[in-house]
Length: 325
Length: 255
Image (tube, rainbow over the protein chains, first blue to last red):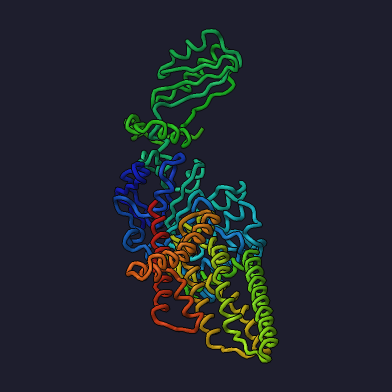
């Protein structure tokens, strides 16, 4: 549905994105993760034909963004970073305007408006001026706008910003329900969001794609070691030393005051059993023992901090996903 | 409803929920009304003088009232029309709705046309209200309607040209005040070109520069002369300004 090949965008001498390629299948939800200024918005603007790429091609539903912009625009629903609302219009007037711009009219327009007002819970505010609505409602009006003409492709730039937790869950549900019939690209800072709604994650940093995979495989791929967290009631002076001698343990970080230890173990060797036995036989007062798996958050930080992060860790790529923490 | 009509409807709605149109309209009508009153009183005084000197008075209202009035309105339009056009694109850019418009499945020419048409309709409405003045005058005096109508044609064309300059200025910036000043400045330059032209006298360059100014074209219409040359001037100026606006809007995508 969306095919991006080697697109580069330069502003003067500054390169915003550099040879980015990815594709989104029909019905798939793809998350775009990256720190500020990574090139997420630039990529989205190219896909929505707002701006042309300096090099490379982007195609949406088989139409080229540079050559057939109108065909592309008709098939896309786009929610920019700031909800594009006119403050002096009411919600209904605004949606009417949006629908007319996209060629909807008559009964189809009315029913589409009704559907989106219902879907996004705008019923109580539909006759109020958008200028008088809160940030969360404006964001929802922005989403209603993107969905109004029931586009095949949705491009959402941080769709849950400004919403309260309950609304965030609702919007995530909404996006999940759209999957299957719609292709969705969404950018986000909130990592659990990517895990919650997306089948695939693209991590972009400094204009490059640094990783692309399912959320689970990404975190598995980046684990260098299994980690174990251990809390003891009465650690002895030589506890740290003794823990190091357990088979498979590579490193121990101790926080003496609270009795917490973090053990780094060799991949694939589960040292928990040995550690437990050791703690019990020595009477250290075992309070807690658990495996720590890397969250997507850690992956994200690691990848975006060093760009060669993936190469270093490619050895671990074949490993299966770790247990949840 | 076509996209252009949708944009016109939306812009008209935006104009009439903001106080700008009401304030600008009230000031415009007040000044035009005051000027008309002054010119009529002045004409009346002349009539009384003539009466005393010659015993009979036959004054020409077309010369004394309408020509003066049309000359003055030209200046008022130069000041108030930039206020009407300044928001058209600048506001979209400021409020980030610009991106939304440009990613809608419509051409930039449709956006520019819709925005221009909307403000042109507002202007026609204001101009139409001033039409009450000659109608009321016609109840009490005799004058020649023909130059009044060509004067209104001149005002319509002049207004359209001013508005197209304003649309261009608004597309250039996201600051409305800057947009208003840029169009004000451009219009003043267009005005003063006639001075530069007459300074150069009866030379080809002098004529060329004078032609670029709207002054002589407008004066012809106010005097009741409909010349194709003048109509071509206004239409080509309008199209050229809207074309430039199109290019400017298009170019903002590349930055």
